[in-house]
Amino acid sequence: MEEKTFTRTQQVKKYTETRPDWVPQNAGEAFTTSVMSGIEGVQDTTVGNINPAILNGTKKSKGKMILSVDDYVKGVAAGDRMVLSRAITLIESNSPRHFKKAQAVLQSLLPRIGKALRIGITGVPGAGKSTMIEAFGNMLCDMGHRVAVLTVDPTSSVTRGSILGDKTRMGSLSRRAEAFIRPSPAGGTLGGVARKSRETMLLCEAAGYDVIIIETVGVGQSETTVRSMVDFFLLVVLTGAGDDLQGIKKGIMELADAIVVNKADGDNLLKAKIARGEYERMIEFIRPATPGWQTHAYLASAIKKTGLKELWQVIQYFQQVTMRKGSFQKRRESQLLDWMHSMIDEHLHNIFFDDPVITGRMPEIKQAVISGTISPTQGVAELVRLFDVERAVSRHATDFFYTGKGT
Image (cartoon, rainbow, N blue to C red; front, side, top):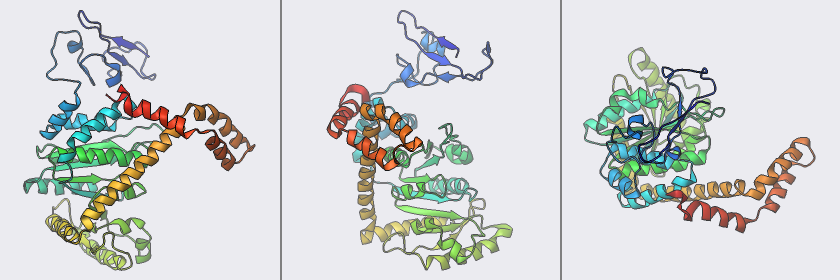
């Protein structure tokens, strides 16, 4: 790969830029595709897409490019969207070097957290979730609310990349000062979705957003994870859902506090009304997702902006009813414990697979399992026998939590 190095006057500070293997050899500056070295590859006060003029000293940066914990806390508390974006990037980092700093930021912001209404929205691809969220968000902003939208984008199992393009579908909402939209990668593991999305949600609450909307990847296992993060869970559906039995078989309905038949306009209005009736009949056979609350189906059109005010009234009434009955607070307490348990699972997974003894023996055992010499169960038993919990925990805790790697 081609590599560039910029130097700064008097002080040698390096910034590298590499090009993918598929870039033509001897490609000139007009061929712009390149990969920045990123935050770890920069040794001075700049990060990200760096202007070379800043690096050679001919131009001065407009602000601090490496923030302290106090900088993050003050910026997020003041509602600075740029600092909030960078704080989320810090939270989403998979590097152990950033973990300690990210948790210090969250800890300092805890007194500002917990005052927002959290809404999860899911539905099959093509149901119009993004269009509905934009119309719904614009309506809430007009009412004086501050809205944060967090979209979970699928991560490729092949390239490990995510498009992160959901924001482009919400053009008008993304331009509003009262709104903040952040697409995040699913990351390939449900634990990753849970921790990062939860912590991102808390940062948005600390920044003063009073309505948090989480749009999920689509109907699948991750919806269960998002259900464990929000107060109110909305299922967006289309007409032509199938017969009653087919609808009941969709386990996602058991998680929904409300079902909305979208695109209920024009020639599709009559079909939408029929679909609503079908869903109402299905609901009779399903236990309510929230104790003390009866799920119902509603009509809406994100294009015509009909049914959105009624939907907001339903959500507000849901909050009033569940807070009065105590189920609202109980759900949040349960969610915190679920979060803690999922973090324990993730941590134990990491210390096992990061242990040098396990990584050293793993290839041999994998090959033995593949060749049929031992069964998978025997392979697991051998790895567990080799695993020294005290050694691994001590090493991992020292490296991950208590050293300066997190700052």
